[in-house]
Structure formats: C-alpha cells, structure tokens
Amino acid sequence: MRIAVAGFQHESHSFAQFPADIPAFEKPGGFPPLSRGVAVIGAIAGTRVPAAGAVEAAQAAGHTVIPLAWGMAMPSAPVTESAFDTIAGWIIDGAAAAMPLDGLYLDLHGAMMAANAPDGEGELLRRLRERLGPDLPIAVSLDLHANVTRAMVDHADVLTAYRTYPHVDMKETGARAMHLLFARIAHGRPWARVFAPLDFLIPVTAQCTLMPPMQQIYAVLPELMAACGAADLSLSMGFPYADFEGCGPAITAYAADEAAAIDAADRLKRMVVGQRGALAGRLWAADEAVAYARRHASLGGPPIVLADTQDNPGGGGHGDTMGLLTALVAGGAHGAVIGVINDAASAAAALAAGEGAAIDLVLGGVSDGAPYRGRFTVLRLGDGRFTCTGPMTRGNAADLGPTALIETAGVLVVVASRKMQAYDQAMFRHVGIDPAAVPIIALKSSVHFRADFQPIAKEILVVLAPGPVVADPSALPFTKLRPGLALRP
Image (tube, rainbow, N blue to C red; front, side, top):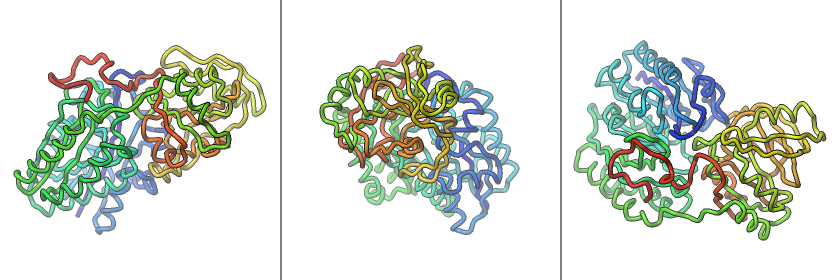
C-alpha cells in the first residue's frame, strides 16, 4: 500500500507572547527541524516523535511511505497565518500530488491555534478533505493535551492520543495510529465514532499519569477497550490555555458498531467525572518552597526538585521569568541549580567574557519586564548541542545555541539562547552539572521533567512563580469558551 505521512505540531497558548512563525518550526528546542519530502525520513529517524513510530510500522509491514512534511515548534502564542498556511499547504499539495493513496497518517498535536484558524487541526483536516475527497482513510495521532473538536472527529477516520504524561509513549502512539490506519483500510468503511466532550477544564499539574487519579484511569484503558470491543478509546485531557470554544477534555471512541463505541465512551467518561474532586495538588509559594528545600536538602544530592510550572516553555512560557531565581538567592540556597533560562543576550555576554570572568547581567525578564540584575561568574560554556538521553526524547538532537553555566550568590544558573522545557538531564550535563548530585534543582517545567528527574529526586515541589502557564486556569481572561464549561474540575 501507498501511505502518506506528515506532521504539524504546535501547542498554542492564547495569552502567551511571541507567536510561532516559520523560524520557530525550523529550530525547535530538542525536536527535529522543519522538513519536506524525503528529508522528513532522515530528520525524524532515531527520535521518539510519533511520526518515527508510524514510519517504522509502515515500513515493517512492507508498505511504501510517501513523506510530505513534518514540523514542530515549541509552545507559544498561536501560529502565524503565514506559517499555518505555508506548512498546511505543503502537506495538502504533497498529498494531492501523491494520489492515488491507500491512506494518510498525520502526526498532530491537537491544541494548535492559528491567527486565521482557532481550531488549527480541524481546519487542516477540513482542507485535506476538501482537496482529497471524503473516502481516503486518515489516521491521526494526538498529544494527550489535545483540545479535540467536532471538526477533527468528523474529518478523520480515527484519532488516538498519548496515554502518558510525561509523554514517554509518543513513538508508540504513532505506531498505534499507523496500525489503526491499516485496520481501517482492511475494514473497508469508516468505524462508528463517538465524541464526548467533558464540561470542565483540568489543570495541567493534575493531568500527570504518574500519580492518581490519572495513573489509574489510563491504566485501565486497554482493558476497557477490550471489554467494549472498541478499535480505539482515547482520553484527551485538553490544553486549558486556549481561548476558543473547543477548549477542554474529550473522549473519542471507535468501534465496528455504534453501541460498542457509545458503551466505551460512557464507561470512561463516568470514571473521569467520578474523580473530579481528586484533580488537585499542593502548590508552593516560591519563598516557602525554597525555605523547605533548604531545610531538607542533602548537600551531595539526591536533589529536591522545584518545578517552576507557570513559566513552563512546554506550555507557552518563555522560560525567562526570574521569580524563582530571586527566591533562591534571597533564601540563601547555595549550591542550587536553576534552568534552563532562555536569554540569548546573556548567553552571548557570557561567551564573550569567557570562563572565569565576572560580569554584570540583566538576566531574563523579557516576557514580563522583571529581569534579575546582578553580578555573575562564568563557570562553563557550551554550544547548546547535545543528544537527549531521557525516556521522553531519547535520541533527539537539541540545539539551544550558545549556552553558559553562571553563578550568583552561590546559586548556579544554566542560560541558553533558545527555549526548551527542562525535561532531560542532558541539558544540565552539557555544561558540567550532574543533576543527581546537587541539593536543589529548579526546572522550567510542569510535569514532563518527571520522566527523567523523578527517579533521581528526593522530593518534588510544584512552585508558583511568575509566568503565563497559570496553575489555575480560572484566573485567565477567557472570552470565547463554550457556555457551561467549568474553569475548574
């Protein structure tokens, strides 16, 4: 069979700064660069992205893979109209030129917004159907944080989402989507499908599948699918920073007959709704977290991890707010490490000064106008190029540009030229820091850090410091959500 493969991933934050343009897709932190045609295969080979799993599954089955385009940008404000139309155009034109096809696989996020398309994935799928017709089987893999919409369900034959957060099953989900595409083709007609949105938002810090209640809910998905005879059953927990009517969690179910799909969706929905009261966790003020960490930290590790959740680059933060650094310095947290700070100017200044130099910096604060001003010593320099080693992005090549390890008042700071969520220990080892051997490590991340850092952590505290990825979505100035959607569980 001839199977076309494409990917277009972005998680869009309506209230963040700095939209995603074409350059944002060309050099995403820790993920493959924007690619077209045959270059896609080389770009994603050896990585953990969903499309890599899909391609391997198709090739192992002896099918011909026709790569169209693949691109991902770090979460930010919505995609520019130009970038959306350009990349969508590459995918649509490529698929049209490759016809006749037996099927199309898409590696999408599910929470992409564009300046000209609030429902980015729904609009991409609509345009594909308009160009390619209603009969071509289309399978889509989605991020667990997808805001699934009716348009996405209507225009694709199957949507299947990650089942882990941190997302350690990206590649496996891509392979599953490809096998579902094979099954759909063999079935000869579309499956019955059910789309069941939930009526409340779930904070991202409560979506972690390493902890209850989501740990238990996702663990029973395979058993639930088997019991109901569903081809696929997915819970997408939503990205609660997207101001459009499709924002929020949703369940999708696919089966040979409608009764089975309804049964699967209803059972899962009852489980999730039954856990509404458990979707919360402790959040620490920055100064309280630092004081606690100082009292309980061990000099040579294992570290107490402070998660700087509201400035998470993986949720639309810019990775440059200084609230937690200020608290670490004020609290006398000597030996603590914080990273990775996104500040190209400060990284360049450290590079120009050289290792061992003392320099005055206005560090970070571009996104919120509140930088940290101080004197720093340059301890180590790096080029920002390394290969990720953690379970989420193992094998991915990262390029953060000039990077430096600097120190002020006994606190160590990793500063880079591009933003990247702190989900891999290699980001710190690159500049000589062994994360397991420090007393306190502060990470610009909400949950993904847990995949690589939880195994080495003495304790984890989720900290409230400045940033747009607010822990309580009800604090955001939404104007376009659908009526009846609760902003808290």
